[in-house]
Length: 338
Image 1 (cartoon, rainbow, N blue to C red):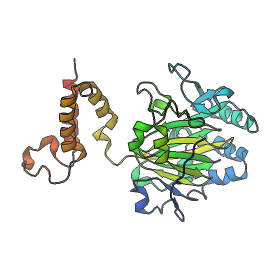
Image 2: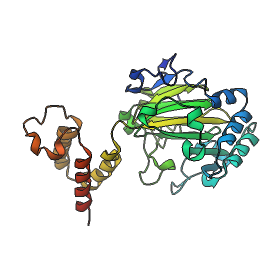
Image 3: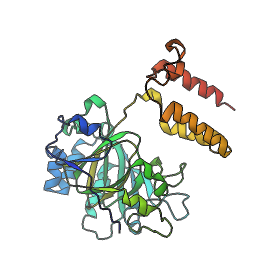
Image 4: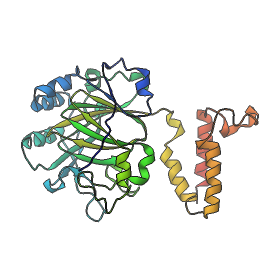
């Protein structure tokens, strides 16, 4: 069993369209208690899981959704198989009605199979959902997705975008860690992972402290968010989070958005390029490049480059514009040709 002593801070009297600016600029997670209480999906789920399922059926356009199915022995954990060459759940495309039927069929099952629909973009599968259950984030143009399942356990991972995650049916538990805890979370391979995102290999239900001793240090920095129907969690970019469905029927709605324009690219691309070109250099050279990265990237402050005339700053100009980004991308693509 995990022992996490700190709970995520709660904010009350915060509703869609009236989110204080300090919430969405927070560098730590925040629970927005009762945020989505008035949403139709929340009201339906509080009456019964069947009504919640029927509400989703009424909006569903019939396109197959991507779902995961695991035998009962997986106990809700969406993870690797034993030798980590694949996964312990089978991914299938299915009619959402069939998935909902399966979830309701196992509602009272003490040992149900793992059933999980991950990251289904609502406008693509549930037209009208976002209009009826709106978080008031239109200025951010978020990617809004729905997650449906039973007592699932999703391994700790991070996401690059900010996230406003709304628990709309059932109950969920988030265990969250600040980004600097990566070394204590024992992250698995980058090329192959459930959901396509690097994950912690620690089983949070039965942590093996002999195999993962530094995980105790991660727990010392962890926070827990227990979400009831209607609660939302603001999760800043890059925070690690382990997510558990606590009830036999759970629905979560996430809203992802970035703080920078899409033309700046994905930061993980820079990480992969650094693995290719920097990681295997001799230590002294890695230290030299570390100093260069700190100067130009991580410790960069306004005014550091005032000694260079603006007309010749090129890619060092602040902020980077679309044309400069295209030039950098074209130069990289040309140099990466082997």
